[in-house]
Image (cartoon, rainbow, N blue to C red; front, side, top):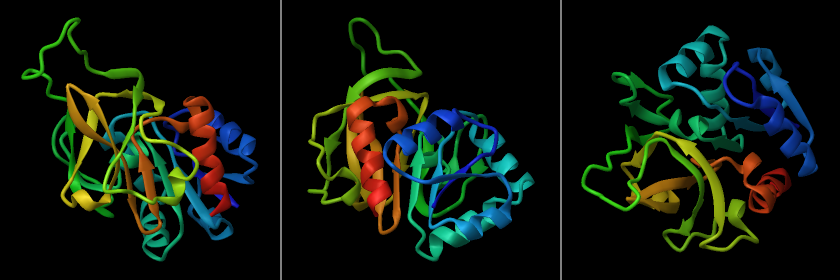
Length: 208
């Protein structure tokens, strides 16, 4: 059973439908006791970092999620679900994340990367993901470096450990678009909006 964390931020139903298309059995989780009934966790989200952390604490979900991931439960995060994994975010101040991965979350700074037409923040739409670190990540099985996926974000992660970078994407400069470490996989892009590429990624997660 795949537990989709429902903390009121993001297109939860779209994520649920996408996982069900990938033949996954899902449960919307909005209470901590529900985590006992799942063997995988998905954390999507489209919102402000601080608001998400507050809401996860308010619903008493934060500590159980962290404990489950540390114990080895497979975790898949999308967009904000990637950013929340890290230690610190600089979105509208300085905020502590889950601290499951070392690094920070910063806003795109494109001042030194002029282009015609000019690049805009947020980064919206389709872009390529390129493999990093000769990745053999099981979540990317059946996919190819250079394929297009869908993004919608103003902030990106900067891992302290470059070995966890699974894919990168160019938007003025190369930023981390997916990470992988042990049972943790997370993407800056939205698999539920990425058509066949996103479906294959979700199928790979379901098969774990």
